[in-house]
Image (cartoon, rainbow, N blue to C red):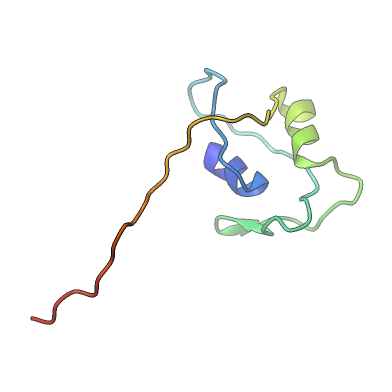
Length: 87
């Protein structure tokens, strides 16, 4: 679930709900400008201008809340790269 939400809000999302298991839900929202129009193989449906934004939809429809916070984030640093030798 968090990779999908991370893609929609374009920042890391950490699951602190403590919920386990698999859930099937439908979330109706209006994508924010600049957010990709597709997540995975299924493109998002046409935008409903009356639909709530992603943050409001998650809170109202799922009873969850996305909160912005600072914290440690995993980062991959590549110090050096070279083309492989031709054998």
